[in-house]
Image (cartoon, rainbow, N blue to C red; front, side, top):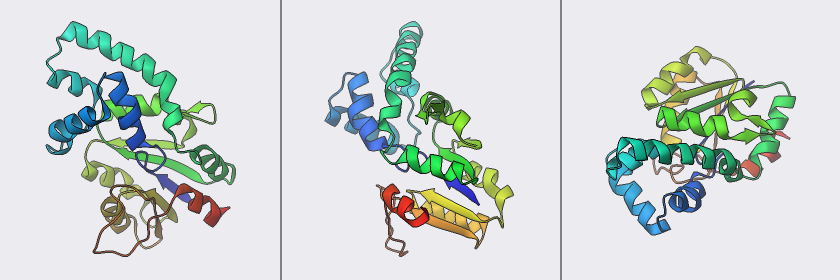
Length: 205
């Protein structure tokens, strides 16, 4: 079986990373960061990145590069603690069972690559741990990348119901959605109950 995992809000506690991590690094209160993120990124449909964050604030190139280098060091030390507690164990068990494990994530490509390279899963970087990593800055690009798995037995673990249904439409009827509870998991049009990683472990192990 092929297991396709999303990263943000699925394996990685993105809400806590923004609230407790990024806000602290940029010397902002949680409320300040939340409002800044909403106005400058979410409302404009722009993928977040630290570089764009600083550019919007008007930082000059030299100072920006120094701050981004500082951010790289911080990310390397801190990011792994934002994995959901069950993530390491579940991923390891799927890998030990011989399944092909793919990480497919959507967002700013440079920032997602930074996160994935720094993130440690069972003492390996996420880039090394997964059999394949797919990073797309647009959902359509992610759909195109995954088309080659059409017709395979697939478990899709994602927090975004709309995106998961689009992917299932591409991948076919043998693709099963396991919806992780999160801010994008609910839709009045469909009846798929969101669950947690613990439920995923109970179902398969």
